[in-house]
Length: 202
Image 1 (cartoon, one colour):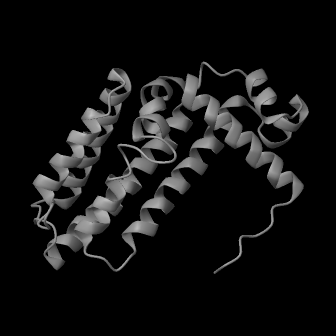
Image 2 (cartoon, helix red, strand yellow):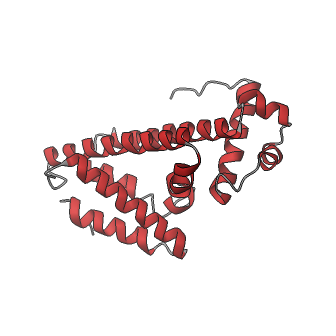
């Protein structure tokens, strides 16, 4: 087992600011969180914040960059296992309706921020858009793997199918958030199994 590198005090402070700020943004949105809120949550003075982030937008960009990297890494850790592709894909999507970190509706920054930052910050918009593009590319590759190993139904255009599948899950997460009801995410999982998988779903 590879040991995680020890963070310096400065790296720990930066990480704390990002983690505290992300929690606030998930709860209130980017515009609904002020610098003072982040300082209080992270327990740092204003000077420490500006040492790492020259502006709130720079903080937002760093937060989203970190989030995208974590999201893609989480997918890769599942997708790179030797299981059939259908099992790998379902293992990823089965976490969406709920888990230790909450449902996709509660923890996904794309769900929370896509509409808001599209009009607020082009830099932040591009980070999320690029992250979504990278995820869909990975998902398309998994669909191709599944067609090859026989566990997933072949798609005429895996790239388009991956984008549509992600859009379905994103929409389900938004509806779950709006209704405060997990049914749309549960329905998305059932539909994903039905439309894509050849493996038994019982």
